[in-house]
Length: 238
Image 1 (cartoon, one colour):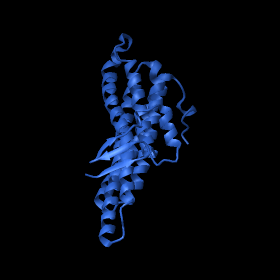
Image 2 (tube, rainbow, N blue to C red; image 1 turned 120 degrees about the vertical axis):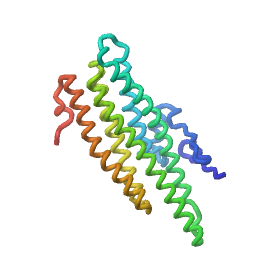
Image 3 (cartoon, rainbow, N blue to C red; image 1 turned 45 degrees about the vertical axis):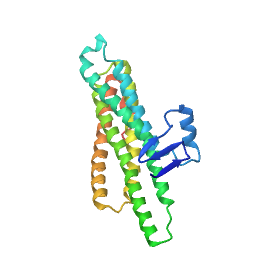
Image 4 (cartoon, helix red, strand yellow; image 1 turned 135 degrees about the vertical axis):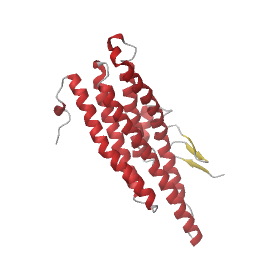
């Protein structure tokens, strides 16, 4: 059994399982690690955490809506958003950790010997496999953040009005998480030789990217209408 230890944050990879402490420590510890000279956590992990924060804000906004008689008309939609956003938050937290694991696998592949032709071939194979995994993690983050944007639009229209500003922040987090994940996907796809895999993921990502912008704009417009504030003051059109 192959055992690899990442010194960056006590992450172990044993047969593909992850044991990480990124989210077990304090926020200060995570930010200090992010700012350090260690390779993990990096941008992919930060993308996952950004999405998770957006999901958490949707959960909070929904919880201040569900169960309140004054907002009974909003309850079915808000309750559904709460359930889905909570599930997405847990998935994005997991992916925040898994990004570091994927990078660790790439580092391990890069360190393989390359003295003989057989070793070189094995190293290339391992690098391709690790790069594929490194593309799949941010792709999952992008998919989840895309769904968060859909939920933000629903909640903006079915939310305790005192919490709508938090839905706005959640929307910005979801957009940031999506766009941050997308660039990581594209960087890894550029290094893959599997043309079918690359084409399928690039096509899906292109479609999600177009929709993400529209979904984000829709959620923001709905929220600003509820707040009776001019969207253009905070989100210029150009």
